[in-house]
Length: 424
Ligand code: BJ8
Image 1: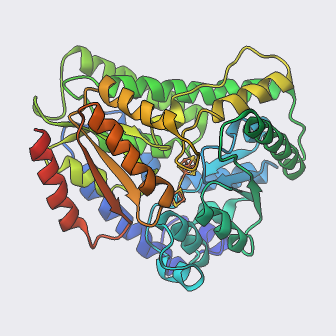
Image 2 (image 1 turned 90 degrees about the vertical axis):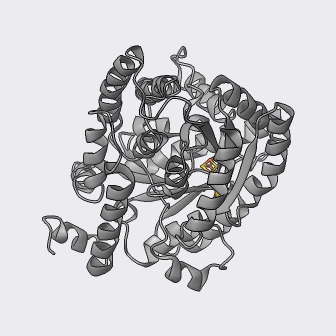
């Protein structure tokens, strides 16, 4: 079936047939997992619309921005400072990497035992399925885990890639390294965009990204009410969309959704029956359209009330300090915020364990589901310490390792149902 966007996708050199197949599967998946939910907020219509136009209108907007001389920069990690990109009047998009399409192509050049997220971004490029990647003037990688780091060496044969070195520890010398990297990135962005990043522009960008984080923090507070006023799936989707929607429009729309949510909380209305077990997700990020595990959990009699993840609280918990007028002060503030990100790629990573226990207590959860992508060593190994910290705090944990395939759905459902019964 032809669409009004075919010419645009063809210009971007997408494989039109394979792409149409992907959109069809995604549409069905979305209908089953999202549109079938009862009692959704009216504000979720905005998210449904954005998702339905993810490869359409949003790409059109990016291409319009490019036609006006703005650059599009794609990223894979929350360490990459969006404030720098926005200060150069460029557009930043998080490249999702949450689907299995393209896996076969990826496995021709990557070992099969590579995590699904890495195979996904490589596979999407090789199979010509992602209009976001094709719209990017630059893709920014980072040296977080070994898999990503080495995959970027291959990826740069297909797209312009720039890699930031992320420290692995949090001593003073690591912060110094990261500050140097942020400055190097600023120079690169200035070179690619042809714009100079001034203190004023950087200050505005800091406020803009902070506003989005504040709105997501508000959402995070409201969604934790008892009775639970919104499904975990919907909140995950909002966080996922925050990575590629226009930041001003997104913040306004989610702000309105939060107003509606606040009314619901005041009225004591919930989306699940009283007494439904409250669970928290912790671990690897869940990029669009990775909704498998949240759906399994919420169709097994539990509700998700928090995500300790980079597509969740790990990304929105800390703000950049705004009280600095000079470029140097703002750079310091950006650096300090990102040094608080407790990704499992760091060692030691005690603060993540403390955050998980604090978050579980604050959200009054009955249990935690630790989610690791298969072959992700940092999160799989850290899961042992997470489990021990939670056990010491008297909070049960279920450890799940999976990828994007649907083959293990029944097996996962059996394990999740047993866990839900246990914590009930
Ligand atoms: S700051 S979590 S967004 S790196 S799942 S590719 S770690 S093998 S995604 Fe992440 Fe930045 Fe850390 Fe956050 Fe490697 Fe693991 Fe795959 Fe991963």
